[in-house]
Image (cartoon, rainbow, N blue to C red; front, top):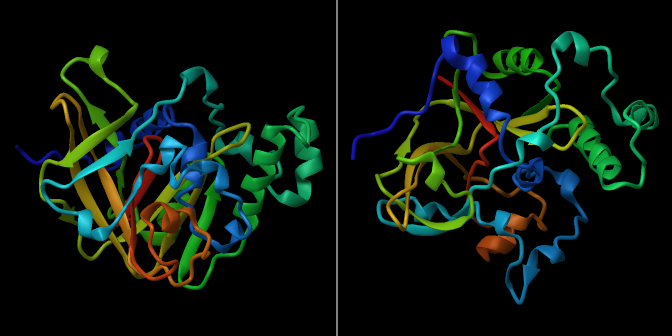
Length: 282
């Protein structure tokens, strides 16, 4: 099978980013965040009899799984386009305060009840964006494509060096595409991208598009992967990341329970939801 590339440079960048917003519910992305602000999170509802009650848990895997022929159950969901929040320009976003200290004003501004699921999700997003980075980490929240791009360049690269990676589902006939839980097999040897800086951006629940972007100054490995579904119809190409040092993670992080490993004892790897963006730079 020929290698399928999925990194693109800036000529097609903005259109790719716009398309990448039209997919998965941000709830999935929130499970990939490893910072200490997750302390005390109740995740018992995600499991039933020791197994995953929530199919979006099927995104984590062990670094030993990264080899040709390994089969894993993985969930790549697609969101209803009618539920995707609006994308603001930087000029529009800069007119709206973005901090937990302004939560009451923001709830009133967007006509959202404080105790509603949307209100609670807004609060959580603002808290995570306000939260200080842990040692060895860089993070920011982008409230527009322009701000995310500028902050990404400032954080890891210049225009010339920066590339973007996203997860793509490829089928011969779009009518046969399925975003349910499937068994996938590594169809090619995963290719490690050596000597790069990486920044993962996860779309967060908010009245307009907000991306939470974070990365680590060391200890992260990035791979290009090709996954084929059991029926041989659906090919998924995209990035996978392995966090080699989890010693600073919250001991209750859901990944440790999903992988059934001792907290903070081993690397944790994961695929990316369809609406996530991974920036890489030499």
